[in-house]
Image 1 (cartoon, rainbow, N blue to C red):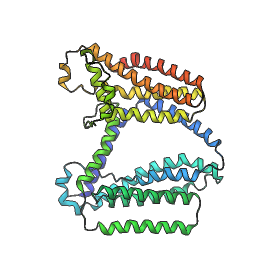
Image 2: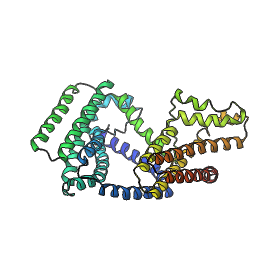
Image 3: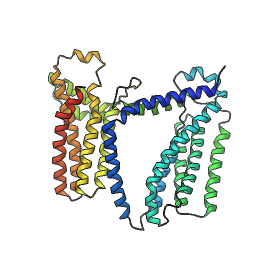
Image 4: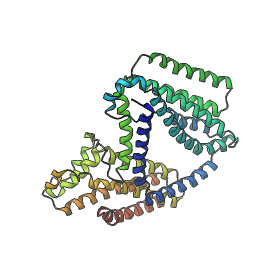
Length: 403
């Protein structure tokens, strides 16, 4: 006898155990210390930045743009598996309760994220508007209602396979969310907000009617769920081996100019392999780019020289530490062991590539500070970054790679 309630409980509990198992590896001791340091530093400078804001700062617009993004992105975590397109397809009509529970679970998790985001942004509004924090709860409740509407509308869009429908839906919902949030923060006339509410209701109802006789797109739902989990597994794979992770490789021909500079010689075999892996794998290249961009933004908005120096060291450490799994990326490929290359050449190649990447990141931070006119701290950041990169690569990473 099929029991949709038991199916959902089994799937949800299994997913939570899976996430919990890898989160223990991600939030290990030294990562927690680094995160606490980063959060504490960011909170201090964020508070100082807020104090310096003028009354003319467009706080409502900035908050509306950011909140609109978090409200609009509203996927329903369905916990579906590849085999479900065969075994659960005949039971689609009996899975309404299953997907309803999935929607509620998605709302709870995403609502918590929205709470954190709005809690971070609220001091800007309180400072600029002078209204204090008294309106935090009413605003949050309305944003949660907006989130519930987005989840319901996004679920209805899942019945369509046309990419254009999904793109237009995301754009329209974002505009509605951002405008509603802006007018709410501006404390616009209640009638205007009610008109937007009616538009939202009509928008959802129109798709509800159109999808009444349309079946679920199982391939699309399962692919979306697998992509979400693959993103988490890629993050967890930076800290421990994840058997469930499927490697994703993307041909980036425009980056071949870096590969072409590597000499064609036997001792450079592993340098070519590691460099090609770094450039083609979304895990490593994407991680390097994201951390560099975040570091650039953090360093740019920090006017205190020592703070810039500490953040530079922090982001170099985070980048280097999370690139260490590149060393074991090909450990399960037997043909790599057939290379007529010594182990010392492999170690040298890995250290050389890692050093180049950290030096490039140090240069980027230093040039950014130089553009701000702080040439002294630019040289200090460059020198400290190079020294730290050297000790990280040739001392710290050696101890980590032996484990």
